[in-house]
Image 1 (cartoon, rainbow, N blue to C red):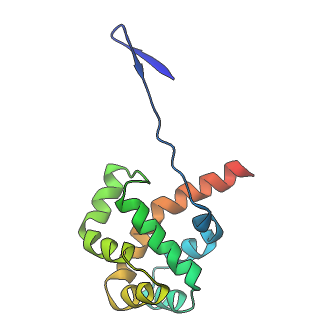
Image 2 (image 1 turned 180 degrees about the vertical axis):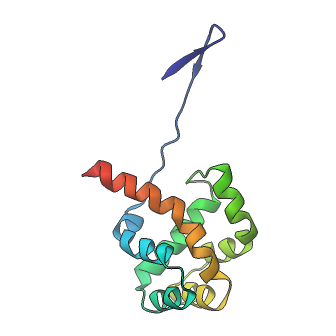
Length: 130
């Protein structure tokens, strides 16, 4: 798409946000975690999560850190205080390591902030796909 500004044609490129199949498969799980306000309920959801669901959280953290999923300035500012925790989650190599960090570390507090932008895009993707 071209847009004329001051007599010059500028190419406007809209970044396409790509949602991975694992995120789409576990959309309901991510939505449940993000919606839950109670730390105790969130902890129970994590405790009962399957390895695939926990690895979805790792994938989301890794994609946000590597800028595969662009965020708005406001979303970045919300995640900025938790950047060290997001890095630790993204480095998890197993389901057990992810589970331990999220339950014992600062992970339960950052999960909603981390997942919300992804959930919105996944919902848009699911709606347009149907």
